[in-house]
Length: 271
Image (cartoon, rainbow, N blue to C red; front, side):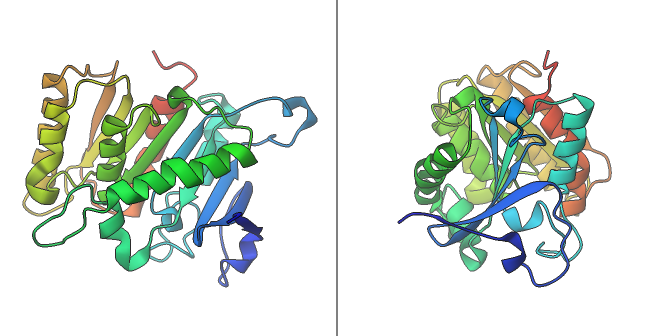
């Protein structure tokens, strides 16, 4: 089935805050928004190709009108445009993939959890790397190699991004792992990191210090960091770990950290 393009206003009845050149597609019945860098259609750039950053929970990235919490969005479109204009990052295509609503846990979770179920991430990952990436690469001027293909998300989306990068580094060479649900399925992700040979990937990992009352989210993230180091991943060279003082588990917190995510993964001066 050929994915269909339709105008952005058809998606959203309420006033929206989409910024820049954003194009909407229905791919396998799922809404996907593609944010193109400034000047993408300029004659001067007609032969230029761009890295791509695939992000989960696409409803929350560009527009508060569609976000899970009304009015809270990542402002990913504005942030990318600003950093590109300043020359802090290379121009990048952002692909905002809408989640599956009630099936979100099933799709994002790499392992089944005794309480919350899930465990369907392999199927979703195959769709993402197969059907969606193939469509994006065929439709836009992309750099298709792993070094220029990033995956990202927060919470379960962050767990999904990390698992995919570690197990499918031949596709995803970079990943943004924001506030990852490392606790899922008795912290099974730690065993995956331990059991999987070190891969040539670049990871951003972060956590807020007030994401839950127990403080377990912070401890889990620290344990994930330590497990990566034990497996041979080097801080800064292979991954950056950041703790955000006082930050909670919400879109506003992830929006505040997104500039640093872009700088680390796509910065003009990465070293």
